Image (tube, rainbow, N blue to C red; front, top):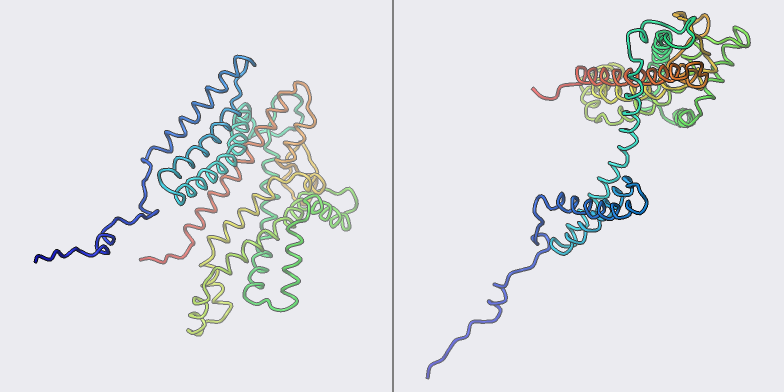
Length: 366
């Protein structure tokens, strides 16, 4: 008798392919762009039909509807082909990208508007003349540019050492109630309205020089009050990021604490500290209300911070727009050109901060 041996069923089952959601199907590389294009085409066709009835094509609604169709379509297609995990990833990616584009719309719009209108008076006369004895067309903003640089530079000289030393104390030395009190006061100063800083500076100098006194140094003090909490907060965070191992290595070599801070801690965090300082300058260089109260405005050149009123670019923009004369376009062109100049000054300061951080940051490689 012949006996037939049948292989066990377990072997066949073990050889069966295993389904894994991580190795499921995958959409082609250009599928996202094709779906986006198809969604925009469908949305364009829909609003083209509506345009025949209304007489105008709604571009904003076309983009919004096309984006919604893309998000829904890419999620459903990915769920059917790639599985739930990849579909969720594509959904979140589409939402984050959409949020980024929405955030970029006002930024690009403001930049294009300022450049378009500001170039009308972006000439040599604008940067070499003041508004003294100028009525109507002509004139420039040299007095406002000088005033902005003088007051902002003086505010930086006041606030940077105070803010940096305060942050060093909080990170390296501060303990107990005093440190908590300083932290609380810094948090309170961060949220005060800018006009309150202007009132403080005006009241402070009115005590010594009498009521109605408006000077450039008062405007600088008002800006310094706004800068100090930003410098303290940003520098404190950067100092806390320095590894404690670096401090301990310096202490093990017998280096005093103050020298460790100067030679180890500060050079290690100089890039972040510089960025925070530039953020604080950008925060105050466009302030209008405190300078209107503390420094006032003038149409003449003034290089003396302690004598007479001093003009600034934000106040110049405000006065040119609020007090339009004849012809009105001349005042508006000067206002837009001053706004463009202010943006360029902030951009140059940020570029300089990047260079400073690049050259003075510690080199970890050979």
